[in-house]
Length: 168
Image 1 (cartoon, one colour):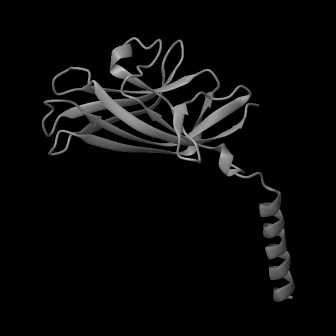
Image 2 (tube, rainbow, N blue to C red; image 1 turned 90 degrees about the horizontal axis):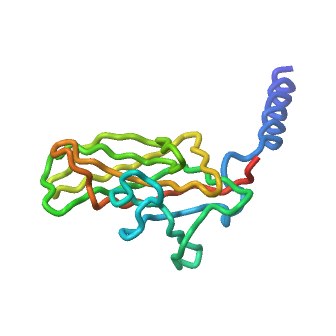
Image 3 (tube, rainbow, N blue to C red; image 1 turned 60 degrees about the vertical axis):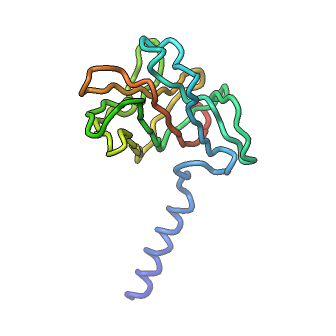
């Protein structure tokens, strides 16, 4: 009797897993890696010279080029790696770093406070357990402000990862 119940429960669990929709990309072509470029400020941002837009995609062949979320799709942002540095920034500067969806009104994806290291550089890793949805036509931007001096930080860069899925 114990063996029959155990097999029935195991079969029910296996059937449930097989029927569930996948959480994440189904095909490798749906995985997205997008980076910032020093010369590309975030369009429409109030501090447009002090923000950077994630708009340089890298294909599976290693070639980089312009990137935008295709029509009819959404980008589910799962992680970002951000680096902040500036000429003359010294160790132990307190920094406010923001990852935003750039729309008419910026919407924060991530807000973090960090401290620059011994070389005056700060590195952050952001990971979203459920992902953050970004629709086609919306930019994702990163910005930083030096809270020690009160000045915006001009040099901020990053790599954003996620996957594409249909816009429902």
